Length: 312
Ligand code: SF4
Image (tube, rainbow, N blue to C red; front, top):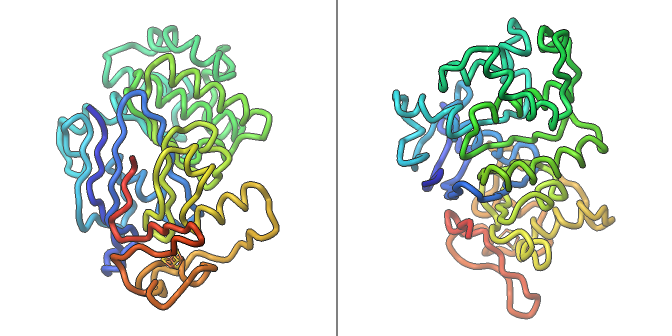
């Protein structure tokens, strides 16, 4: 049983497309990554998986299901899955935390709803997890409000909250942005430990190829709301086939050839492949969808075929 995204497509209320038909699937034990620049559509995808699209964005095609239940339609069954079997760590911790609730109430909220646990019972059960996340466990900390915590503490509190009901699947949206580099390294190894111990399946979303590469076994590369390339992480790192993946890799290695450039404005995106303005291999036929690009000689096997990239 898993989370299945089948040809999902998102658009603004005025019809402007933000996410092209995109498919992926992951289940318990899977470590899947989604990487791309800010504005590539990663967070919109994460929000849609949890049924939390922002105002003004709508699903115009495809479907999302988790454990056989539709996640794109409100229902009692969906409410029972969200927070219990499928949990979400949003990009902005303040989005997940209630500013008027103390730490202990934030942590015992989901166990109270889904497991019928009291605050004291939930806190006692979660104590080892808080210690592993290097969160204080004293009474003073438990009584603090989100604005009294550091950015790193808020980030780890949101993760503890997401893990509080021992979910099967987790969506992590840029979970390391508020952490300093030394804490980040600890956080990555802790996540790998927790994932293995709990057979947790996660979708790890990040702009940082170095981060997702270290914690995933499968990867999808997103650009301008389109899946560019997907496959086993080690293959993508060893032999990136798409010009944009190659560019991301150069940037991760801080190579000078990795000029930054900008994502296309959705209103001004070119016809066909969205990467055309920045692509060193661009040719006239890139404005047409549905064909494979590149040549045998240069080894390029461009995967910009609309809807044709699947996460193997
Ligand atoms: S379709 Fe053309 S422009 Fe797009 S990435 Fe491939 S070669 Fe470059």
